[in-house]
Length: 204
Image 1 (cartoon, rainbow, N blue to C red):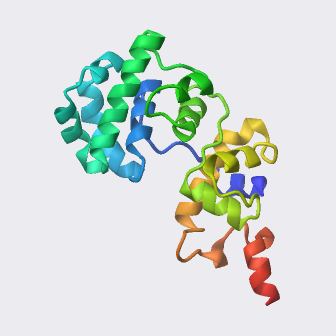
Image 2 (tube, rainbow, N blue to C red):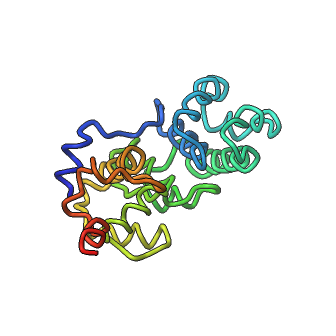
């Protein structure tokens, strides 16, 4: 399965545009319930306006809400950005921390966001479990867990640690392009031969 995904998506990477760990952290917060393409339209002006964590922490709430409004859930996202950046300034001297424990201790930052930052900004393996990864983990019978954190822990011993980050990218891309939620394109799926879902259908 891993080799098939590698062949199908050899250039898999984070599709959020960023230049620093802080920028990736902010972009990932904005990406909740929003497309990466939309986030990438918003962040250039945002990053130009707020060059560091201190600037985000001191942002006027109403102004920041307006700047991120098009990403949806803008009040919650603006608050999460201001609060996590305040923690970064107070607890880490303005620098984004490099451990899962420190990242998830920041207000507004969960394991998914922390793993995105670790894997893509710092090169530290992290399994990102979003809706695509959750769906495909079930369809491929990799786990029966429903909770995102439990899915993450279930995948850890199955996927080699050095591939945790890229494995998440593979499943996200495969979920977007082929194995979508409503009408999966099973006829062109690179994993069709080993898919338990297809095996059940073919045996009926």
